[in-house]
Length: 227
Length: 77
Image 1: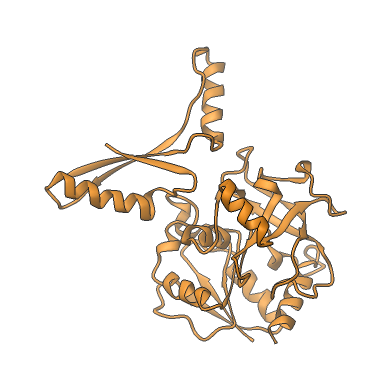
Image 2: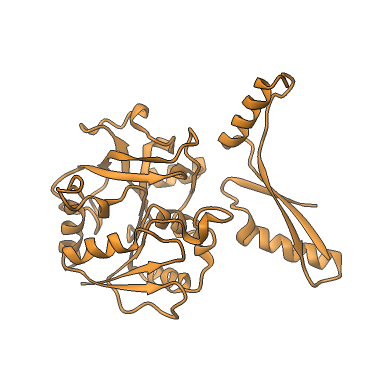
């Protein structure tokens, strides 16, 4: 399985993602934002970080960069696109995913481990995953997901809410919402579920001696589903 | 010519920075402040002399980049 991680000026989770993808068997390539095209891939990843210094709005400049046209074409042809953290922000700014990530409700940069619950398994990302409540890491200032009422209804109707913040038992009450996100939303799918954007970082959770290793469930499962 | 644009959050969209500014102003003794909404201001110089044409170009820029219409409104001055 081939994957490509796109690097923008200011991306800083690109190498962690590279390590994670390779650990689970992906042949990963790094692609610079000014490269004319993306090599043949089964998965494209937009990594976390602060692309273009978060100027204007997080992800807004990356969403108009040269390489993004190829990402949009790939996504529209059904290719798998995963956006983590800033990658999620970029996906909303391109319009590939609905809504926007606003500043956290309490105006603080949040850096901590959280639990998220997988809400839908009828997709390439989570089908057959062995664990449904994952301990992952978040590190963001703008993770407060917001969309219009119509968009929220459509997200619900099409089972596009991918993961929600919860406690270790899967209770996704408001008190377990770290950033004020609408309905505790931590990640969403596109309509046909080939695009996933989420704030938590599975790539930071792949080694027991550094962190939890719940990210392993995610990557192991993803590559199995792609085979 | 120069075109000026103001981008603000839509009514009803949470503006934590505006809220913090309002509370600070209240704390400083400006008890008359009921609400503050924060926004962005752009000064755009375009090489179009016709005002109508320039503004229509800037309108396109607002829609495509300067404002995110999910949460923001814009005003061309």
